[in-house]
Amino acid sequence: MPLQASLAAVEAQLQDVRAALLAADPLTLETATAQLRAAATALAQALERAPARAAWPDGAQERVQAIASELAMQRDQLARLLALTERQAASLLPPVAGVATYGSNAAPRSSMGARIYRAPG
Image 1 (cartoon, helix red, strand yellow):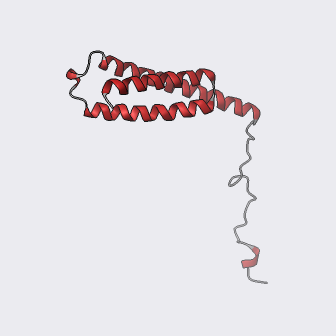
Image 2 (cartoon, rainbow, N blue to C red; image 1 turned 60 degrees about the horizontal axis):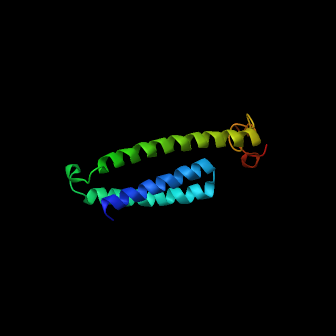
Image 3 (cartoon, rainbow, N blue to C red; image 1 turned 135 degrees about the vertical axis):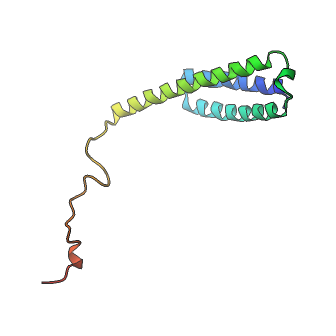
């Protein structure tokens, strides 16, 4: 895929991811991020095949920089969304302090070992 087409595909997928984030639709977000990942991979391959930056088409370097800043912004938005989701889950299912499935709350063990292994008498 040529460089310009790869840039356009990534930019379009970034728009789809942004729309899915704003809509708070997890299924659409999952689909959009998978498509963005594929488009970003195609862009990386196109950049590897492209000539030196000096020979890139006009505006390509600025577009790559804009994509990088947009990705950073969306990563921050995803981190905020994750924090909000964790708070909402904690409010519905509050953690129980001091209760562990394994480990610290188990009954204390005797230093003598299990009763079946002790000699009679």
